[in-house]
Length: 467
Ligand code: LLP
Image (cartoon, rainbow, N blue to C red; front, side, top):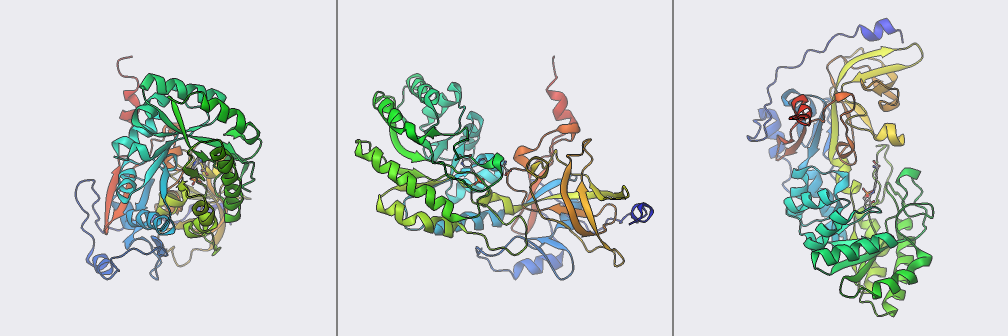
């Protein structure tokens, strides 16, 4: 397509429909949308998904037009969530775990929005932490710290002391980690409940950056060293109590057999550990369940499928199952909403340039990850479908949100979303190119409510005050 044609797209005038968005007051929705909401069932069902294109060609989040949310938002880009979808995702795990003793430890690293955490806590979730600050945040959001698990291959003493003081479970990752946990227990004057993170050497068949349970991974203890760790643990009976075994295979796993293979190995280790007189009660199989990023109709395993593959094993040993989902709880509850700055071509490639970028959403650049992209409103009737790279304004070629996407040519100023942006997007956002972190909103009961302020230039300058 000729560049002249692409750049001559008319600026799309923003519609005047007023939808105010506030962190304090509920939005007054247009009558039409209210009516739609009122007729929706009050109960949330597992199969319903929050974002859908309706016959009118607009993208909706739980009955609210994403374009309307754009009009009322503080600025673009912004993250837009569905609170009900978070509930539905949590309920899917709760239903799957029915009849089992269990702890759901939500992996805070996936998304650390305080309001999201408060909501998950209110639903009954525990949490999985990888830093002292994540523990502090979990406590602020009223998670019960004794139903939280502290993970990591490089936990520092100061954070371990905090975990010991709060009575949080701690996973032993290495020889030096064991030493530090013992020291933390002594400093806090508390016995720490520990799990052994065993590297089961099971290939999760995912991108190498998110595989964590194979021989070459930096996480966990080598399974051949199990006896060494058991002997060492026996020498600190006042400081640590071994209560379980943990593994985490990796992330974006789409075959539940992989979890079953690991669980079979893990219960064998638990049998060995129990045979030596340890009262081990917990099997922690980590997180890692993948989601349908491609939106191409593939049927992916559900939380029920995952739990069903390990249910009998867990029951046969009368264990309490700990699971650590991040992505499968939060990814599909959110879109990054961007505004189209313009459309251009370099002769061989066509680009949709939006205001969002690798600073707000780095997964495509970092892992070559696919996240589905679509326009939020119907394109002009004469808009042709063209193959585009969707890129941001950041000054490097790694800055893309999607490559080779067939999309109708959008008008300037129109909205474009990147789907499944609830996990590892905002939590991995940076201020590269001084693009300040975006605001966040969720649709709650038909209203668009702010759940995080956008960061500002003034926020940045505060780091230099008084220096
Ligand atoms: N437990 C442990 C010990 C973990 O390391 C992780 C994630 C989880 C649980 C949660 O896994 P999930 O259910 O979310 O897959 N930034 C990457 C993902 C890194 C995952 C790190 N560990 C991404 O954007 O795909």
